[in-house]
Image 1 (cartoon, rainbow, N blue to C red):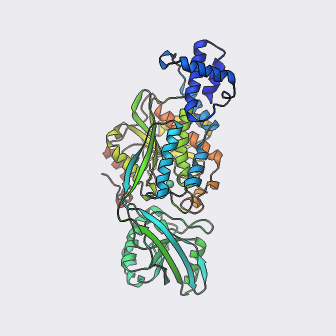
Image 2: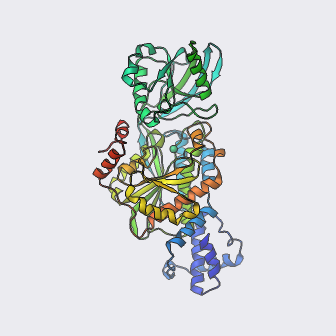
Image 3: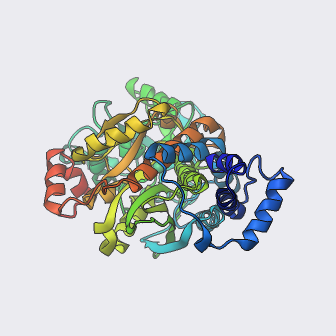
Length: 530
Ligand SMILES: [Zn+2]
């Protein structure tokens, strides 16, 4: 809390400084509900603050001595590390609201919660920006048992935005499908799929990204061929972790009218072994979900710190408020949401004001295909030339190890100065590989640096989208460090004397996406804007 320390120091010097800085302490800490450490307990300071607050008006204030960028970053880092509430935010969101699938009542509660937090932190222009998801979906029971050649209860959970079996479930034989084969080759066997449960086998060598495009087409064909259900996670992937399943979406803006389940790897491998032995394998499977007949409401949650010199220029600090529902959404993306709120709080508490506006956004609909961030870019189209970029934390609970500038190789040099200025937090890698797995994507398409923080994902691989996505997986010290780093990056970018980045013209972005071979994937997701 450097601002408070200055107040103490300067009380012993000239009257005007003393007056101004105490008032500043009062103003910064007063509305935020956090006791200013070391001052609230001192009756002298409290009296001073009381008297001087009555006398003071902003016009009487002397200008603050200019602080160097380093001093300004020190103030942000101090506020971030010393008095962060980001862990409490993550805990509250996860424990009190829990899993919050876009369009659900829990997601609506999370939107209200986000608005309340932004207001209590002291952000400006706090508001919700409503948008509609094309269909809502909710999870019902999902259960499966092996019934031949032996009986065993199996661990399954439904994927998102998929259909149901007949009520009460169905008994059916299992047929293994090698999804690495081209779809037209697979389809030659599709007459044999009727009445079967299709178990997906996917080789490790295939990237999930490429596999997911084909997988959607396969699911449509499986439904048309009257298959009973499909066992296979996102892109047909097998589950990871001890007796865990991983839910998730199987295509952007898609609903597959066939039950698709993720099965615990231990259970899936037993079935695979039995099939290898040549045994007939029969399951009972019951999956009951529901899909809405029309769109459901959602909203992005927005608050700002208005810039002092170029307020029309905007840097976005984003994370997604929505989550899946098997766990609590603590690591995906309670951590990201808490980082957004905690970074805002650190900058406000520091007393440092950035030259440009920092806009804090809790996106929703990320899990259904970056819907909230795409809606944001659409809604703010006229403002996009004034955007500088966005930063997003969406790799869970692990420590930040670097930054991905998503195609903006031209910014690596200037970003390395930033990384140098926060080297007290460690060494950070800088890459510029375009990825479209989170809310940086729509900013990248708009020609801006969508900055994804890269993290240690060892534990996240297990926790995300699973029943293990719970508060206990998050280390408060790591979350607070991550939050502070994000606050520093946002402040550094928004406070540069020269604007850090402007949007590339569309043809330049288009060429970059072609050169980096993501064109096909974006086209198949319906995200190619050129
Ligand atoms: Zn996420």
